Image 1: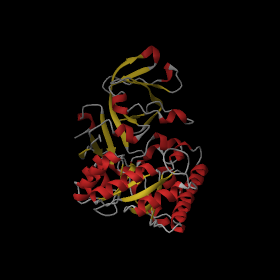
Image 2: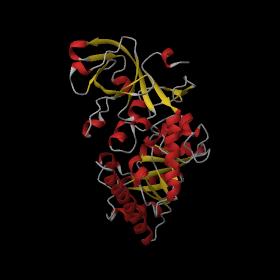
Image 3: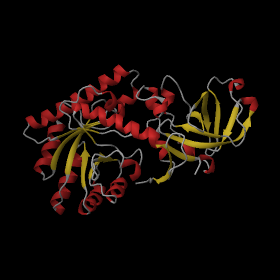
Image 4: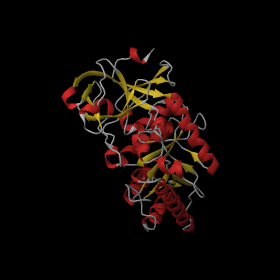
Length: 376
């Protein structure tokens, strides 16, 4: 199948670029002596995830229990559910465990810990738990020096749970404005996670796992002493947000949306396509960066960026392409029927709009169609 035979919009995955991205990350972490636990929320597809695994059984990181179910059905058993657990999901976790999953959980507060202990006492359940640490003020987690770190650990350990360790996510790395800043964030992430592990051990509590990770910090970490595993996900595909902070080049972005020109507004310098935000997502992550890429960078059908052309606006099923200068005279004339590929701001969000990947390798024809899933 040629790309020209596919009805648009459609999600295109260049497997040659993807494999190169995975190999680069694996080699970097191997040099630092740390295991990779890839985050599968980006791809949500077994055909992609198999190419990132250390072994057939994992390990992986999931962000939904539906992901855990799906990948368990494909033989992957070693999983970390990297969203704070809630009491109403513990029965689902038990069912997954009974089906053969080793599913570690995370939490960051005493209330959730007490609910878990109550479930253990009521059902005889066994849960492995990591305490989430806030290493950068980005989102969730216990402050590194907070007394709650020890009290949560004590609640879990004394209440029958397996205290497996600590984990953190340096989400603020996505906002770094230089490689040096990412390097410093990687060290901050590492040092605070290790510090928390040391606090737990000094209190007589177990802490075998020290789990860190984000694609920027994983890419530029120079020292991971004390860390046992790194979690990262978007590195598999990369995207414009990552390119905007120099974590990758445009040529590393493996994911794009195939679209067709359906009309023009020549006086405005607009090219109208059949891929709107339902195909690209509403993510405007690059709007906060030095170079705003709109809803995506426009490439020709071979994946080569067209100078200055971005998806400037997006309606539900219509994309408006224009020259980033705003000068209508700078917009190239692309006839109706022209096929284009749009590089996404956020690979996870754009991928979530589609139910399959059309797999290519460089300029070769489509070699496979890989299904992907969504939902909770």
